[in-house]
Length: 230
Image (cartoon, rainbow, N blue to C red; front, side, top):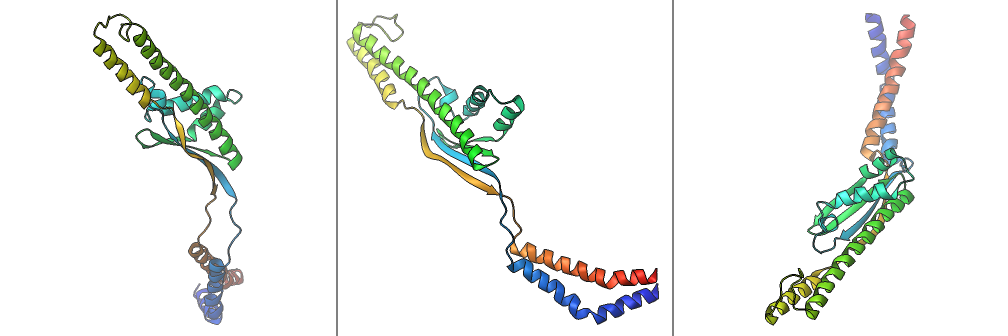
């Protein structure tokens, strides 16, 4: 055993220069030589939307409940997919409130084409449903105004408004509501960003090179002595 240790130490002294140089060389190669760029592992599509502003439709106008609408849209518009695939899509959709009445929709797909196609379909459907809901509210408000202008009745259709001033005030309130109403619109168009697989930094590659060099030299020094002893 002592002779083995002695021989190992002699080999270390004999090849000390190589023990120092080889790990340093491999470390330098690791630091300066750029490896092959990692292929994109996935891609994330993002679109920013300003929510609509009208009454009695929180599923389209409240950023806290829009997520439920998005989930419903996915289930209703991807009927050709399995339940597992639909669930997977929903799990990859992120609905992030930016500020009051503004959200960021994002979806991470396996590649740029999938991410763009799926998020584009979801956002287009959301905007279409919002537009339909907005138009219903708008038409209802206009209908109330026309009815009040034609008859001396309240917007509930039951109370007679003999006071012209009261009727005009009610019309004014509805008109103001109508002016403030707006449908959802796109703040920032859909964009896609590739997500590259993580690559080692130059420092990490240098450390790895040094460790590989030390491992090689340790084997070069010790293994011959082990076989010789056997």
